[in-house]
Amino acid sequence: MRILLLEDQADLREAVAGRLRAHGHAVDEAGDLAEAESFVQSYAFDALVLDRTLPDGDALGALQRWRERGIASPALFLTARDAVADRVEGFAGGADDYLVKPFSMDELIARIGAIGRRGGAIRPSTIRIADLEIDLGRREARRAGIALPLRPKEFALLQLLAERAGQAVPRHDILAACWGEEQQPASNAEEVLIATLRRKLGEPALLRTVRGSGYLLDAPDAARA
Image 1 (cartoon, rainbow, N blue to C red):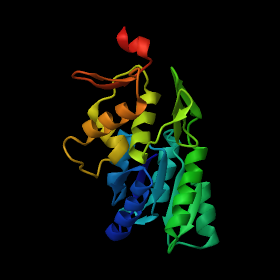
Image 2: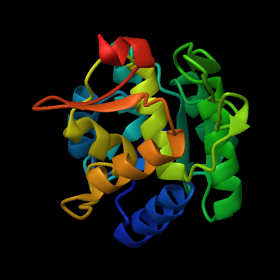
Image 3: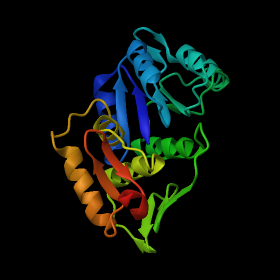
Image 4: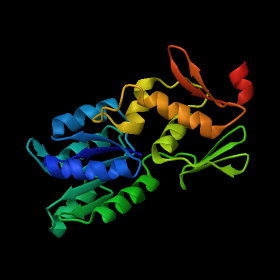
């Protein structure tokens, strides 16, 4: 998933972001509401993880505005405000879950996975391209019935390409989906990732480079056309 993490405590934000990335998610980090607003205006997120009390205001008000604008990404509040009234207010304001600090990192990962599965938009659970089958729920892929040994970033890349099958996906979108805006991978990171995924997908080739545009996933016949 692509996740927006809004937390003003830098050490906690980095720890949570690191654990999420270790589980294969792309994470964009914001330290205040203004930065979070910029991200929300620019990208679609699969989940929002929001601290409530921030230097420039209460994230609940921001979430309410986003909901009014039609942003349906599931949201989890991560906060020290543990009163029942605070929780009720959060749910009424559009939150999908609420986790009180201090918290277990494993529980946070599980809760984010749960709200992500519910999702803000309906997506197909399985994508099929030729003899390639991608199970988004199980995060598994098979080709001609044979399981592909994909690592988290490889699966994230395959999902991105499959959701835009037949379209060239630019480098920037791949970096954002697989690493997030905050990480600065090596200059050839996406080329290495593409090459590894292409090798694991096997023949006949489904993944090709579109010079000047990016990378495209499609059925072999379409690739030759």
